[in-house]
Amino acid sequence: MRWLCQDRRVECAAMNNWIAPSILAADFAYLGDEVRNVLNAGADIIHFDVMDNHYVPNLSIGPLVLESLRKHIDAIWDVHLMVKPVDRLIGDFLDAGASYISVHPESTEHLHRTLAMIAEGGAKPGIVFNPATPLTVLPEVLELVDLVLIMSVNPGFGGQSFIPTSLAKLRQARALIDASGRDIRLQIDGGIKTDNIALAAEAGADTFVAGSAIFGSDDYEATINDMRAALS
Ligand code: DX5
Ligand code: ZN
Image (cartoon, helix red, strand yellow):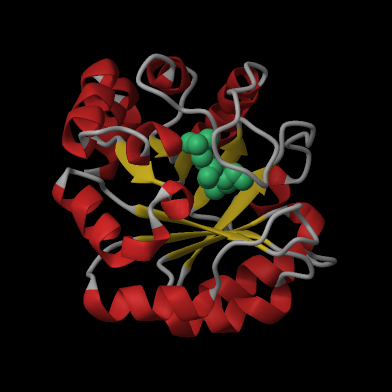
């Protein structure tokens, strides 16, 4: 099937879009229910934002929370690590059951080693680019990653406004991914709403993180359906 998708990328990507609610915006008093509700509403994967009040100026959740959720809920767990130094937490997230683990190049001294550590541990490695970080290192590690995440806000908080320059970066990343011939997800994270998700898709994204747009809405299923309709 993969050659088909390479030849007909636009059609395949349209069939293959993933909506990834960020549980940072969920009601933490009912976190398990919130995760079940977005999955029942049609979410494809669960985005799990980890913040340490050092790499980013906010504190969120860690591996214990993932381990607890994973025991009760079957899902693809998409862990976005905003922590520095990152290496010493990788093992904990592997043990907790992360499916994807994405890291920022600035959070490790040896990016190649960190990504290899994630893959060797059985998870899919991802690399994350902040709004002011160029894609310079991406070609060096494309062979190692299963996901490229373009930040469309500065990391640390939900509910921020989408930064439009991220669209050009998505296009650059899409070109590099396509040239590699590898099956790599291209994710966008920050300020994604029903009214701008199509712009990100047109620029090459196939995986869409949305926190406040989904968890801040009254009807998760309607919001996810609206997002899919905007993508079709
Ligand atoms: C920001 C996080 C995002 C954020 C998305 O540091 O990585 O995942 O929670 O939230 P919204 O969709 O509200 O911008
Ligand atoms: Zn995130």
